[in-house]
Length: 291
Image 1 (cartoon, rainbow, N blue to C red):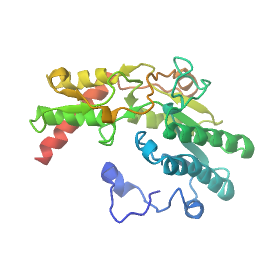
Image 2: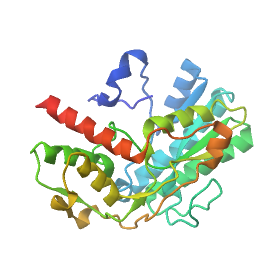
Image 3: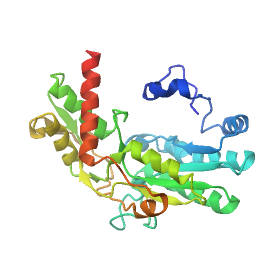
Image 4: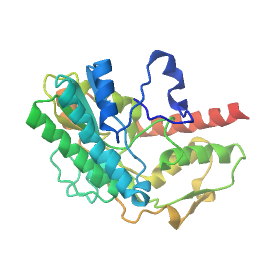
């Protein structure tokens, strides 16, 4: 399901476009969602739609709430109206934990979001639980910690880093401006996390699962590994820019994936170091091929 646009921006799915059918609808338009549910009779619905760039949620807090909170309700309501046997996956987020109440975070850790994005995701999470319990819908939420890949958007810090490293290595840039290098995240490979999403909808009973690597690394560590991978010292190229520091920072996120391992048989296959190298190599290749 995609929104109508005068310009197509599907480069991240170019490799599979011939294998899928794109249908137009919009999370802000309830009837359009009901229509495609009725026309295509899906067995499973994965709601990955969101305004997902955290810094933008301060600039557009109302729009973020409409997509990330009310939009989830509209998806669930469409399932309730069309076919309650449709299995539903909601993309919840580790940003819901925000100012963390315990370390590591589990499925039972209280939420304390620190951005309009995190607040909206908390609503989306709990409305999913509510429809599951109220209407007996097979609705599951994956509380996914940061998941990255070479297809990550350039506005996100991980891809900004690996793209910057590649440009510096190739002589296309001289420095890389970043925000808070001390922020810590639990990073993993997006491919592993998508497998976890699918596994949730293959279970007899729905539930909520923390999906993460269970290890934390700082932004500075990510930067260091990325530069080291191409034989450079990040201290020679990285500068701190206050424009990229969040108004309210999430300082430490680290999850406990024990439940997912126990009930889904899931665990990550790509290490932090392998992930960073994969992304740097992909950006090097992409920039070199584009020359």
